[in-house]
Image (cartoon, rainbow, N blue to C red):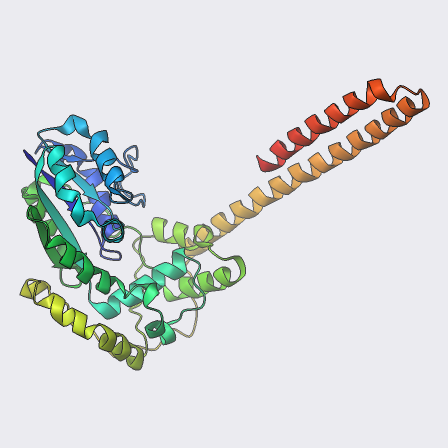
Length: 376
């Protein structure tokens, strides 16, 4: 029998970096009989590309769990490793506690080890807000009204409570909880310890972060784009955060009253959770006096080059689409003039019954070709 390893995030706890590390060490882990499972990122060789890991749909349903394990049936007798921060939400939604052990045992896994990173509530809320602005088109929620929007991210702590209650029903599941706020600088050590492999076995990624947080200037710019275009992180934030990973970002905090409001809402749940978490990894009250926000927005030369390249390529692509559309419209107008001429002649020659169906057929074909050209 073997072990099923599940690294389940949650969000904003170094998940992208950990997944980069796991992809980078596929061979080394395989030599220890730990197989990084086939999933969405299976064909990605570049370790630093941001992905959702290899298990975003693992617990969408009992059937999805079964199918994912079946895809990796060739690893019978070896340990199998999945990683995705989508697992907790899907597990809760599909009542994963009702089937996880049954299906795992059916595929040869008698032990299930789960690694969950948590994060102190205020820094989690801010980081999730930054991510929603960067990726989800947020332009309404600000640091000043963050306490009014649990869906922006700090409600994740309620999900942690729900998940832990469900996992307690499983006899063969071992849950390891680590506080990212306390160990963000030694994630590789935590991963090695959890997988029970020597730290020397694992190659450390050459970059210290993957999918970095936007700077204040980048956030302000992205927020303005979101207000006009909706989700538009692919045009601005994504290329900056993926390519300029070494840029240091400001320590942003909401006003002190907002921090206290968030802590007040979460404190009872956190107190209950801390009773089940090792002392050195318990949630901490991380309320701090915020520093003034930068008054001047700044971009260095590298940022400007990437912004220009990304927005410039988008403009060039739109120009090309416009040129193709205008060309198609011109061709349609010419074809329309020809068809009118032929139709007039056919009416004059009283040959409508013969020629008219052919004209209709040509019109349909031309329209279909034009639509395909515009959509291309």
